[in-house]
Image 1 (cartoon, rainbow, N blue to C red):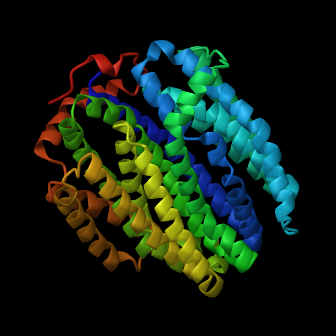
Image 2 (spheres, rainbow, N blue to C red):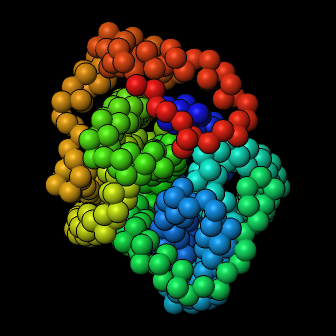
Length: 495
């Protein structure tokens, strides 16, 4: 299997898996927003944001290092996976009690401690241990169809259980209970496939290997912690300084953007093994391959940004209801962060691929401080728009810092030059959308997508060499809809 075939295969299944994920997650967000109302949605969003603060302490960035190590040394995969699982199990013994103590200390009377506990258990135990490690194994072996399968089953279970709770008039506690059961199913399914299709992890008490994990992943883990706080700080500050209703208004566009991130990030994430191998060969190869990846990232994210920005009011009112109208301005204002954040994440992966993940920590820490300072200044006075300004300002700063670090220590990828054609295609499609945005959003969406594809073709965003590769891969695309066990490492790339 060629490099391009491997990337196409894994990107295809990542799109399928995350596409299923985003459709169900977005549908549930719409249903929950209408069911709970702005105030209830504010409490729901706050609980998720509060629990998310603790996720980096168990995540530690281990999945990135695990992918890298298995890609390099597959004969030791059992040991690597088993050690990672046991390390996370030991961490949770301390982290879960600490989280519940923090919940009791914060003591928000409007939030149920039982709901927080259920969210803790589902997120920190069932998702971060078996599911995250299992997904890392799938990517290490470049078999993302298994992730797509697990995601499909998980979302079906979650949708059925949540709708059932709503039909019975259940509370927020019951909603998080349904999520807990779905997370348990997802973790069990992921672990089952790891054991049946790849390896049988051997739980290893290996302090030396744990030290290696922590040493290598800690910069990524710290960066992830800053990045995680970066996304949650708006919700936490709004809930503290303003009202639950305003938190709900901000929570709607926040959920839309983060749901889109949940699709885009794994799609970009599948590039890590390929970036690692390219960097191992030469920086020149990394530079050349990275240009194509960056153009693809811009094409995906720019279209989403333009559509969300221009159609925000129509989308919010029709999907979430008129009581969420204040959310429209927030959605329009923060939509560009989708582009900036995707680029920043690609630069994170590039630095990881060349073993300079410590630099990620510097960039993430700086950006979090920008976000925190801006939010503390603007949110108490301007509410949800203050949070929106802080979000956009911080993401622009994040992009600038990570691009500078990548350019200085790895390569610039010729970034400005390769962005000209994709930018022009997106701009022209945006002009078309401007004239048809008075029509219903589903009609304008189809027209926008069609015009965007046409302008991508007119501006030759995809180079002739890339078109040749796509034609050569056409037969491979049909075969990849099945399950092949070929290894991508031992074959030649398409020129």
